[in-house]
Image (cartoon, rainbow, N blue to C red; front, side, top):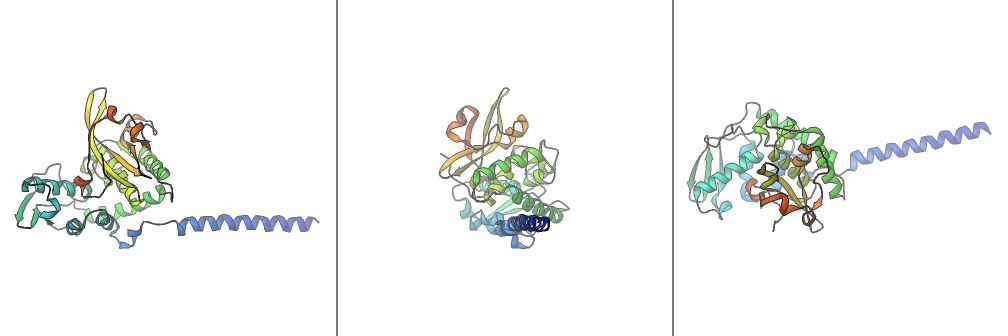
Length: 287
């Protein structure tokens, strides 16, 4: 009898172990991975192209290949009449998501040429270790994505993104590009609102969430300050998350997954405007 009982216990334990192992293997092997990771060192480039209009693809490829100039069809900025303003917008695109571009804190290094249908931006510089930076970022980004993505649950994914930024990034500008890029967040672990918002935007877009960066002014005790946060749509409802405010307040749930209509939005945020066009990435529409 004792032998039979021991056999039953051993078999049951073995089955439970196999089930647990199978679950682990399923989670690792069958969790939907970001589809652009097959780019063999070009995952981030493929992400930028996937979430921008075709007119911007050549620019991203030229930047990725460390070209000293980039070319953008004038039609990509047809809503901007002045050539200088259009060129400035292109430069904003570059420095917003081209974390390996050495902007040196000023746009004075750039020049532009308009030749009929094309705007060419020259004077582009790169960090000396830009190739290494791109490789490091892709590893860190894929790791972050696998930590935050929850299949079929956008709200859980957003909470995970917020938690990742809250736990791993402090507020400050003593990092590459003064804390404004995704590299500042994932590698330097220090960023300001631009870096927080761009990282949220990237991870949310990778996870299939219709999101965008919004810029405006945050109302504080000292008055309004220039700020960036994220708006996004889930099942047709617009939500707001401010990962920077969560981090600086020390309250991880200060503003996360709040419906825009219930977030004291107009009392807290002034002059919000869609910034997706300002970074060359597609986003939803803001009223």
